[in-house]
Image (cartoon, rainbow, N blue to C red; front, top):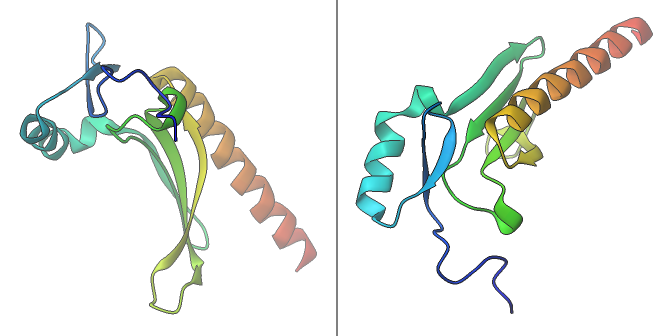
Length: 123
């Protein structure tokens, strides 16, 4: 199996740079865990609760997925629960940059709002 990125590329990342929104590699797992814990609010690109309830949440995950994706949008659908009572979770999209993640978050929210309007029109 081939690893999807260079052997010397970090797997763990934090946000930094002049804008505070640029992924910066972090080799120390303790520093990475501490940063993630202390900066939870700063890692959130967008979060909204829609009727249903459905929560659309876009966040910097701090781990490099295959092909350099650092951000993801997840949809927590509380109208469809699993057997253990937890909401159904869909990972909708993954992104490389904060700006891509913000645009993706807005797109996913619009898609869910449109879907809800269509459902209401049918009922």
